[in-house]
Length: 118
Image 1 (tube, rainbow, N blue to C red):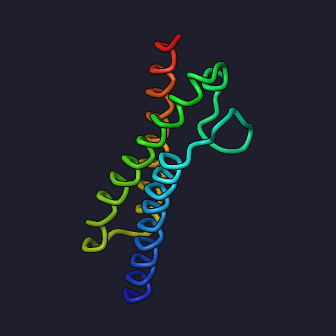
Image 2: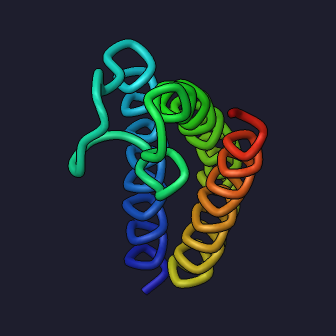
């Protein structure tokens, strides 16, 4: 039973580490290859970001940096759990909560910055 719980914890941690790396990779891709024009498929899309080309380009760069930062923070906070005995359910709840909080912060700060652009 303990071995199964330990294996589930390791698998959970590996998945969360990979998710963190996805945030970092997507951030770098968006930073290096931002969408050139306003579109409905790729990039940071909000009503305010799509209101002008200037805001659109700023939002892409700013949110990409946030994505990289979010990935680094998520990775840094999940690494210690490889060495702690915590239930996979608790890990899942804490990781998803942290991820949604950081993504909400990204949106709030990006929208605040966009309001200052004319």
